[in-house]
Length: 285
Image (cartoon, rainbow, N blue to C red; front, side, top):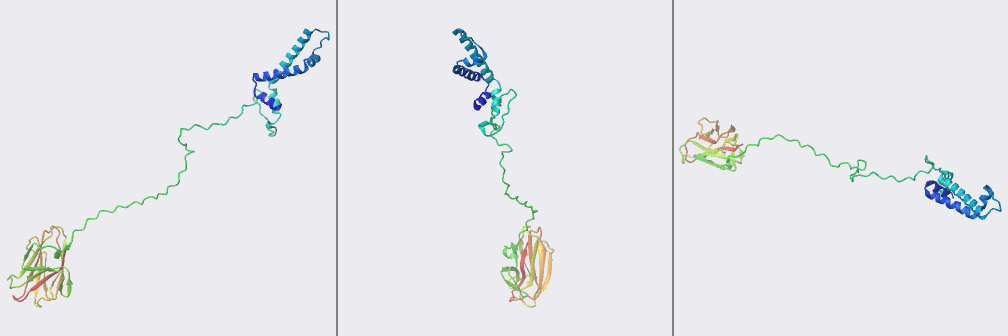
């Protein structure tokens, strides 16, 4: 019955009136209207059948009105609120201002999205494991070193007297692996001067060598060593070397096109002797 009252209180529609009408008619049919008529209206026992019917009809209508008024009022909801929902929760039902029960809660719908994740829905990105690349420091450009080489590995462009190259020559007790030499034999030439020219093509800056006489030369031999540049008559280097002596030679040749190595022999003319003036490890760079 409580559930019926709760259902009635939740819906104040015409169905409540129909339900109340049915209950009233059921009561009137069971009692035949006599109970109601006897308590509220006194009818003479001798009254006719029409009068009795009218009285019963009026009584039934009264019961109907009372039922309709009851079930259409907030009374069923009030009565139902006295009992907990389901019989065990004990929670009182809160009435709306008009006496009815509030509408059941509807689940809230999630907000519509455009298909793109919001800031709150963005997945957390793992920390980057890429290590920053070190900044490479640029080094200033360094001018390329000029080419270098031994004159023994270059081809002479002009020779006067006897000249040549040997991989190994010994002068004043030292071995020179890259040597240029000038030689003199009076049977071949009456001139005391022997020289050799090399084209430097203006590529080199310095000429270096060791001036010395070969250990197999005559002990009384003496030679003047001279270095000329570009057919100049003034030597850039000049020194006299006797047997058993040596001198370190270093001559600037920057911008020089042709280099001449000259040797002048100061010895008695002897056709049987073959003397050599060595430029030990002659090098340009």
